Image 1 (cartoon, rainbow, N blue to C red):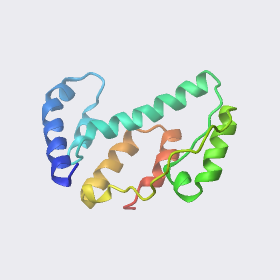
Image 2: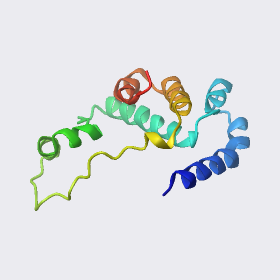
Image 3: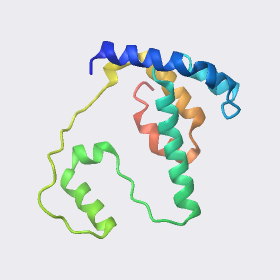
Length: 140
């Protein structure tokens, strides 16, 4: 769980799947190009696709949604937890586990890598997903 270990793992993962990614009919050349310079680019791609598909699914099925961002817990844990319980129509049972605020991994990425990751995210995200994710574009 060190910076060096993270970077080595990302480098290995990027290299392991690059050939398959280039041959994939699901990834356009411009997306493949945007993978360059993004450590663990597949994780960013999956993160955005999860948001894209979750939004599409809830819209198609007309499901109610309740969006919570990490910082909601950080800034007002009580209200955030209460709102979630109300949305789910469940009562609180016991005390919730302690929330450890301030987890931040920005230092795992250089400014150039963060910019490259956000460029990839912006390209892959639907407009609805981008509205939810763009708040994390720290290098604007």
